[in-house]
Length: 228
Image 1 (spheres, rainbow, N blue to C red):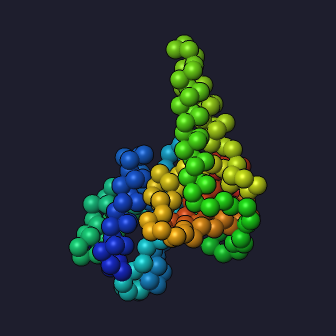
Image 2: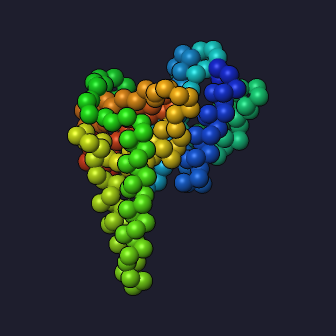
């Protein structure tokens, strides 16, 4: 098994936490790994959010495996999590699996340009909290016979498809960022999170210091993007 040497224990712990959160939403989750040099990108798709989550991991030394200097493989998130050794700051690369459709459709690597209008972190967290309260309130008001899966999904889609401020970013992308640990509360007084919103073609990317959420305008079901 190929062993990845992560930069430190913190990187290993963050990777394990990210994988654990993905598995919370899908016990059979798969992730696509791409490594080149000292950077490892881990792509996952938590169900219901309709977004791609990207966790960047720093490696202690450039990736190399025989004559291969890059890694690009889809593996079981559960098996990858089991291979993470936080104290040793290592992770083994499991055997490849047949990837889900989304694993063949990734956001472009370049061409990203900044987008204006993204509120601050506290405002974004407030939007998610308000959306959760609204969803609970509206579903609790439904009569028992009207509390069907279809109606709950309809209310959820209406709420989470709303856009953030003057941007095209859906609120569900912010919800995904918070649920996956990318949008964390401010730790120290005066400490600000470096958030950014970028676009490339039909894709939008919410970037935080802890990871990114990418969403395709029109949904991930449309495959009119480069497949690699």
